[in-house]
Length: 203
Image (cartoon, rainbow, N blue to C red; front, side, top):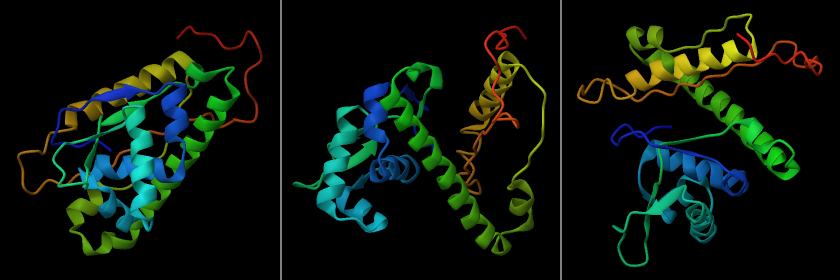
């Protein structure tokens, strides 16, 4: 979701910005502005099958929590919107005990998984028309690792560092394409959470 034409910047969601973002249209609007660049409410509404009035309303809601901003380059009343940051982040621990925020976070993460599935299915439907070099480079892999919580966190941070190193690697090459990358990590025994005292923070 990062716009490679700009320096990558991120924001950490709080309960207020999470509440605003956890909405079907707003989540899609932010994603579209991050991947597609600045756009008017009318253009976004056409792509999403919405109407410009509703789209403008939800863009203003996102603006209140600094997730989108007016570029100031629109003509007349046609505001040109852009994503205020290249990405956002959160930790589930930020919202423990806040039942509303936890429900919002659950909705948002389910939405992202559906977005991942939809985007990858689009690629699978189209990949046969692409050169084999791209078909071999793209794709999906899975594996199983045995880790403590601290080790899992460390591995995730290392993966993030690799992604950051390659984020703009192809910017000067006209043959480069923007690619979506997702990091998903979860316990296989999700229905058997550790008991109190078993959540060691040692590596």
